[in-house]
Image (cartoon, rainbow over all chains, first blue to last red; front, side):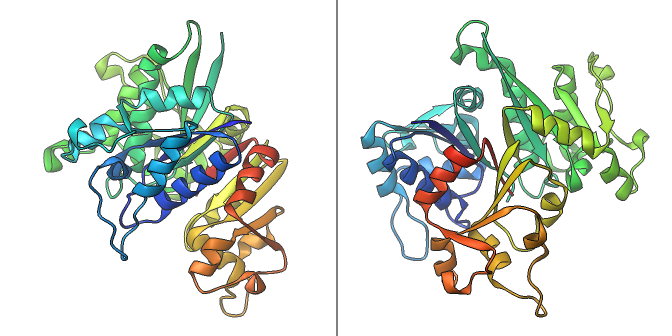
Amino acid sequence: MGKLTIGCFASLVGSVSLDFAVKLSDAAVKKGHKVDLWVSGNATMLSKKGQKAFKDYSHLAKTLTELFATGNFQATACEACAEARGYHKDDTMEGWKRHSMDWYLASCFSADRVLHIGGD
Amino acid sequence: MATKRLGFIVRSLPYKTEASRLAMTHAIASQTVEIYLEDGDMVEPVVCFIGDGVLNCLKSQQAMKHYGITSLEQHVKNGLLLDLKIMICKEDIEKLGIKEDSLIMDAEDIGGETKAQIVPYSEIQKEMDSVDHLLFC
Amino acid sequence: MKLGVFMSDFRTGSDIIDRLNAEKLGIIFVGNGIYHATVKENGKTSNVLDKSATFYALTEDLESRGFSSANLDSRVKPVTYSDVVDLIFNDYEKIIWI
């Protein structure tokens, strides 16, 4: 079994690229792999707690909660990107970590595969 | 002891999206990654500007003056100051009519010694072949 | 290198594909990239399909956009997320998203 690190810049609402990242994480974990998910830029929205489900907007919180429960998935948000957007440690969904960008590079160091969803 | 090389391939235009800025800040974060790694392990980034991404490397960007934000020029200079390998695609600057003297080639004004390199795409392809992971931005 | 490319857009990214060299190249159409595998603009299939590569399209993204596997160009194989995981770990050592 391998380790996949996924990094994503795309926003939770307004793009489905982040949906792709979470769905791929789910599929990889179900096959026994470990997944690290890093979000920075607008993607940090994914780590915000209190997201309400509306049918016109992506809602990934439930899947994330299930992924955290497996123990084979960890997700980290860029601390500076989140703070710049006005949400703070107390606003962060349970299970998430917040670190600086070097965390992502360290995750890439030990990953078998890296998928970086940058400027799309 | 191991070194993993990460290739940041920047093809996004600056400012409209955050992609090229985040590419630079993530690459620069390699300077502090050791706190998460075993002794002797390293992450070495290389940043390659291709396609429209070469426009991030233009001199005289005044984003701080007009928007109060750090320019991509400053980020490229910071990268050079920290001795990051920075490559700019020769064919793409020629295609866009950009001359070398319009590009940020060094960070001498802030004490940097490393220079950016204008290289044919074939050299960037070699970098893509040699790095451990590719991160397109 | 063995390179897997996630192509997520219809109107951008073809320039990158044109230039990429890899001893083994896989192109996985996801998101709006699936239009490369389904739409014939002015009766012509996407130039991306002329690249020497193995092509895949994500079924969920096909179906989300009103297509099915039956609409796929014959060069393109439909894949699920589970299949994509196997491609990532078994077939391609580097993967990129454009």
